[in-house]
Length: 210
Image (cartoon, rainbow, N blue to C red; front, side):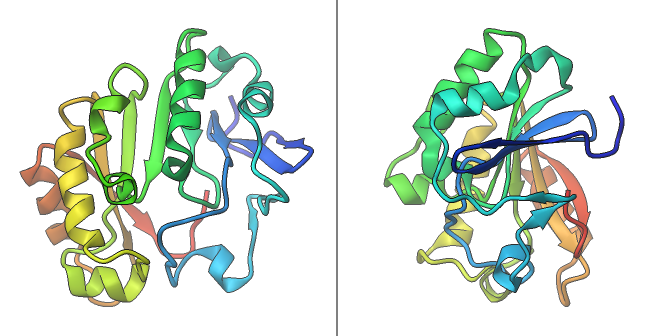
C-alpha cells in the first residue's frame, strides 16, 4: 500500500474515511472534549491530506462500515478524523467488533477523556474490541496541558492519565503521544510518563497532520 493518500470516501453527511500510510482512517464525529489551540479545525482548516473532514451530519454505523469495505486491505483501521471518537464510544465499539470479525486490526486515536465523559470506567468495554490506543498526552503537567488543549471538563489531565493506566489492562497496545514544537513541552518527560505506566511513547510534530 502506498504511503500517499489513496482516497476520500464520502457518505451523505461528508467524508467518512480516508486512506493514508496503508491505513483506513475513520472520521465519525467532529465533536470534541478539547479545544486544542494547535488543532487545524480551530484554526479554520478542515482538510487533512486533501480530504475535507467537516461533517454535515455524523455517519451511521452502516455508512462507516461501507466506507471501510474489506478491512484486510489495510494495515489498520483507525478511528481518528477531526473529532473525538469516544464521544461515539458504543457506536465505535460495535463497528470495531464487526470489523475485527472480518480480519481488521483496530486502533483508536483518543484524548483519553472517555471515563470523564461517561462518569465511569469504560476501559473494560474496550477488551476484545480494540487492538491499540493512541492517547494524546500532549504535556508533562496539567498547567501546560490546560494551556494548549483547553479542556471543557475539569480534571481532564488527571483523568487521561488514569484512563491510560487502566486501559493497559484491556488493550494490548497503548501509546501516549505528545507534540514536539509547543513551548515548554518536554519530550523526554512525556516519554517518562508513558514508560512509568508501561505504555509506549510517540513524538508527533507540530503542524504535521496525517
